[in-house]
Amino acid sequence: MKIAIVSPDLYTYGSMVIGGILRDAGFDVTLTKNVDATPNADIILLSLYSTLHLLDNRIRDFASQCSKPVYVGGPVSAYPDIVLGELDVDAVIIGEGEESTLELLNNGISEDISGIAFRSDDEIVQTEPEPAKIERPLPLIPDDIENQSIRGANVYIETHRGCIGACGFCQVPKFFGTRIRSRSIEDIVLEIEEFKRCGVRRIAISGGTSSLYQYKKSVNVNAFIELLQAIAEVMGKRNVSVPDIRVDYVNEEMLHAIHDFTMGWVYYGIESGSDKILKTMRKGVNSEKNVYAIELAQQCGVKVAGSFIVGYPKETIDDYQLTKDLIEDTFLDDVFVSIAEPIPETNLSDLVLKTDDSENPTFVKHEGEYKALKLTESEARCFDLELHAQMCRSVPNVLTDQLYNACLFDARQQGSDVRAVTGLLQKYRRK
Ligand code: SF4
Image (cartoon, rainbow, N blue to C red; front, side):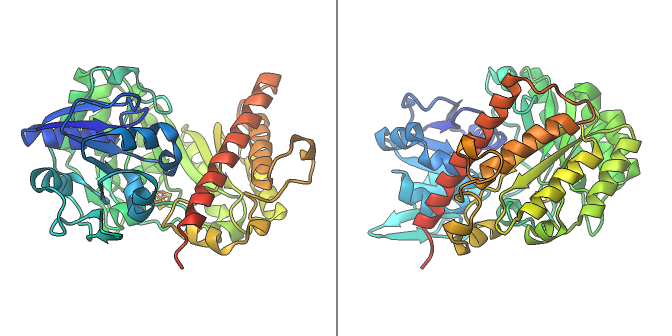
């Protein structure tokens, strides 16, 4: 049977993993990023990682024009009712789809398969997903993987699944669970060697938060260091990065390992300078812990990038000012700013649904210093924080017209995307 996996615009790691499983199970599998043509296949697996994909006309047209069955998987599968409501597809493969995909392809749609959703008459039938096995065959790696760049890496690989955090804006704990399931170093190294053989030059480690590798009641420092060392031996330290470290699950020894066996950066989800907002976000840390972790990394010679979220429900101008102050005080090496995006089925999406648009910064008109730019409050904070961060970085950037316009464009784009996602959420609001 011919199967086409379609992963719009980029080859996600998950689509490559599923491709490898199907290849080894005897299917004739192809993997493509192209949604502008219908692939020649008996069944199409559409891999979607963003809520915005459900509103993307290219993807909506692709799904409705396919004459063959289309099954959707990926992070959007956490809200199958919205997927089935928005896209003309046959089924959704919920959560970790490795095993249910095989069953679905072998047996067709049935209530006996765990972790799928489909329409039956006017109802949506949904079966409970189960965690997949963490061991699997080598992924299906496309020939042009070397041309892909996701924040500088050709691919993000998975070392473990799950996260012990409970951040309200994140879907990882619900999607992969709160128990950490780690792959063996041998499997990870074999996979990286295969990626390298196929042309990959830069690898990043994903999987919740990197330092939770082999976590069992506490952080396993030795396993984390051994992991980095093993990956660096294959790729070379300059070609390995470990994004996404929680500030409360890192110590000096681990930071030295990041310095010695990777390109030497950590990416902390700082999110806010306000303890009140950190609590609302359920981050489980306060500002003091954030600042301590930043300074510890800097003392270990590791560069620090921080990501921040603005426009969270109930974020006041004073909360926002605390975020600006933190950025000013900490001399981060890079800063990423996002407007709070309510991914369906997260705690943030519940908060947003309880917030009237007239009080939601995503919709409230900004009346302050950027009034002439006609921004929403979230957009204005995003724009202002991006400009502020450029000037407060360890090596400040000169504020050119080009940079100013790029920050403004990004803020407007994010604002428009988050409004679209919020609108979708409101459309499917549970009565
Ligand atoms: S620590 Fe990271 S992966 Fe875990 S819940 Fe928070 S944001 Fe998500």
